[in-house]
Amino acid sequence: MADSAPIKLDVIAARLAIATIQSLDLRSESIEQIKQLLIPVFRGYQVRAPRFPPGLRLFRARLCDKPTNIRELSYPPAHLVTLGRANRPGTPVLYCSAARGAVFFESRPPVGSTVAIVQWETTSPLLVNHVGYTREAFGTIGSGRTQAGWSREAAEIPALDGVEEIVEFLAKLFTRRVAIGEEGNYKLTVAVAEKLFADDLFGGLLYPAVAMRANADNFALKSQYADNHLRFVKAELARIDAELDFGYQITVLDTAGELGGDGSIQWRGRLDQWTLRNKGDQLSFVVENGSWVARDSDGKVVEPG
Image (cartoon, rainbow, N blue to C red; front, side, top):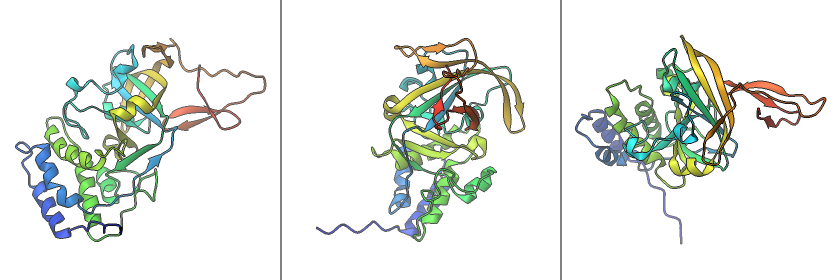
C-alpha cells in the first residue's frame, strides 16, 4: 500500500485563522474554541522535535520557607492548579528550567525572602515539541541570543510556503509577557501548547524563558514523565539579598543531597562539601547552568556529600 500524501498547508486559510485569533475578546472565548480556530494553522504544520538523552539537569524554585518533602517542590495537586502558560486549570504540568539562574526570574522573589531550589536529572530520553525559537521573538524579548542553543538543526523552520509565518505567529503568542491581571492571555498559549505536545509521544514542551529575556530554556513536563523519569540530585535553600539590574544576589543557607523513603528532604544543615576519597585525587570545578559543578579526572560529575 502506498504511503498517503502529506497534508498540505492552506496558507490562505491559515492567515484568515490567525487574523481571527488576533481579534478575539479573550474574556468570552474558551480554550476549546481557540483550539478549533487553530486547526487551519496546524494543518500541514511541520517541526523537528529535539530528543534529549538521559542526564539532562532541570531546575525548579519555589518561594517558601524550608520545605520538608520533595512533593512541595514538584507540581501542585490538581485542585490547586490555576491557568498557566501551558496548562489549563486542574491539569498540572511541571514547570522547570535547564538553567539554575532562570528559576529566580520565574519565581520573582522579593528581597529578604527565602527560595527553595531543586535540581533533577532525567533518567530516560525526553522528546519535546518546541515553540518560540525565532529571531523575531528573541529580538522582541531582548534576548542575547539569536537561535536555540540546544540544537540548530531542530529549530530550523521547514522550507515550506507559509510555515515561517505560522512559526512566527505561534512564537509571538507564546513568548508574550503576561502581566498580573492579564492571565486570560494564557488561554491562547494553552491552546497552542495542547496542539503542540498533547500527543503521547511528547514528554513535554520546550520554550524560551520569557522572564529571562529568552536567555535560557524552560520546560513544561507532563506529570507522567515527571513522576517516572526524574532523579533527585539536590536541593538548596537560599535567601534573596538583593535584586540586581538583571539578576539576583543570594546566600545559600542549606543544602540536601538525599531524600528519605517517604520523599522527605534530608537537609544537611550546611553548604555543599566535596570530599576527596583517595590521596592525589583532584576535582575540576566549572560553572554550568549557573552553579558550580565538580568533575573527576574522568570527567564524571561528583556530587557533594
